[in-house]
Amino acid sequence: MNHPVIAVRVGQWLDLRPHIRRVTANNPSAFTGPGTNSYLLETPKGWAILDPGPRLEQHFDQLVAATEGRPVACVLVTHTHPDHSPLANTVADHFSVPAIGLPAPDTGPQDRKFAPTVQPFDGQQLETCGGQVTAILTPGHASNHVCYWHALSNTVFTGDHINQGSTVVIDPPDGHMGDYLHSLARLLTYDLDAIAPGHGTLIDDPLSAINWLITHRAQREKKVLDALRSTNTPTSLSDLVPAVYDDVDARLFPIAERSLLAHLIHLEELGEARSVERKWQALQGYS
Image (cartoon, rainbow, N blue to C red; front, side, top):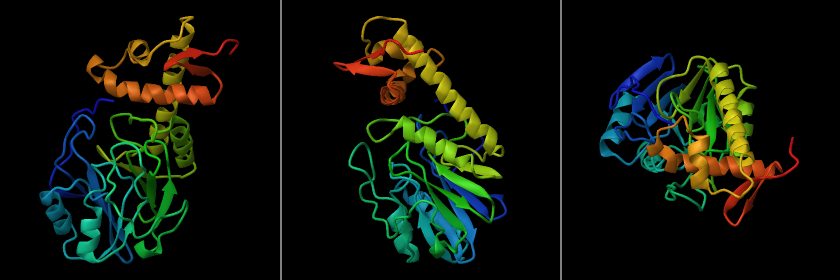
């Protein structure tokens, strides 16, 4: 879950490749790495501005400057965590264009002020963005998470579904491990040239990145089940974390505990574990 030092130019727009421009917000943290990436995607109707980011006046000014006075067609939001969507309606109103995304759920830290003009359905080609952008519903990290495939660059913009240099936290009850794994597998059906993540740099080998995440989650889940089987008594989350996340800095255990809970809930749904008075145990007879 650590973000390594990444060569990201914070606070300046950068042309990543033809048809894609990035502006990284100056909001570095353990959760955001060097900052939240906002993107400008070229479409026949103008820029699509994706994940305008946190409510920072300087970042708003940088996004406007990055358009270089060219038309803006729409604003896209991957999900409503506070580092991704708070500027969305401000930017959409500034350019008098629709804000596209799903409204915030009721649980967890969310930007509940986000008011989408358009709520996309899975597989929808967004005509307001020139038909070059397709919405892919990818719940898991957040229940309202949407990735966007940009046809002109054959790049998928993944918000917090996939990040460069780190795994993402799955935080129940809004985060759901089973949904996350299913959403990862869906992206394997796209023959992509690149992944543009919400944090970090462009990922040029999408297939390897997605397969690594799926394998990593499977290995982590096996460690969870092995840890449960090693004791005959129900075990608390705090007692499980050191065994399951022995490869993670202990300072991150409180964060890791949230994804651990998501794995346990997934194992319970699969019939491989159960909760007993807020503690967990493996179900006997599983082979």
